[in-house]
Length: 353
Image (cartoon, rainbow, N blue to C red):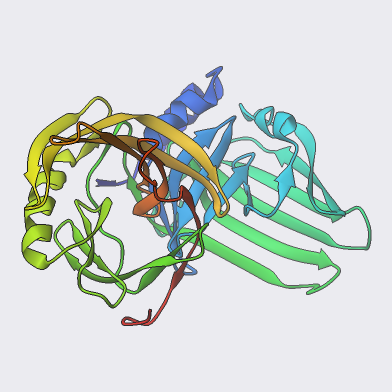
């Protein structure tokens, strides 16, 4: 982890190199995990890059997508993907438009790109590209304007101003600047980073995982002490002694890295067999709460006595620090748990069901 402060000459050189790069996405791909802390509170962390749009996760675990490096939208808003992709690479003095919509409501966005300039914020001095986004509703008189300074070496804006010019909340101004920038390159590796106690992860099935206690890579969920995620990934309803034993086995999969594989024997007292875990790949998946970058892990359990094979596929999201999706493949004679995907994340009082 590094706190970024660049000398003006070096920062200017970075922008010149970036502006001449034919594929801006490749340049930003090594910024996954980078965080920009805001003067207004919270942060944005780069979670994924898809079709020249930047996916972030904030302090409240809410995914968002940045269009043109400047305009931030949440998952309930649709946008013209081909036009959004064409916004990069940014070109000085260029003007581009695209449309966003939700059900019957539509908005027109106009992106105006300026020339690189040196800008100082609390986090330091950066060479940044000023961008102005005018937003107008297709019906009604809403007019908003967002002005940001996008720092290519960071991969996100380091300063942003948003003003309502006409319509509801006319005159409202929201603004922030970067007070700290942490450059990271998560790339193909993720260390275990436990979720916060009190967070509730709601699934598509309805039930939620409420984080009650963290013990290393063992996570107690809900108010029943025997409901534990061992290795931070797999739910077992067992006593503490067995949970500790399973956690020692499963935690060896960390840090996650594509191609990593572990295998171990187990003996529950009622059955014996072998677990095999493999990090199969990295995928950016769509969930009801938004777009998330994930590590796909397969867990194969071979029962020694029945010779039956049980497979669980887990998509783990470093951005929300939890499982984003699970799917199960069981023998036809055995009922598999229902597949699920994360639906939302919220905070709840510790001890809530």
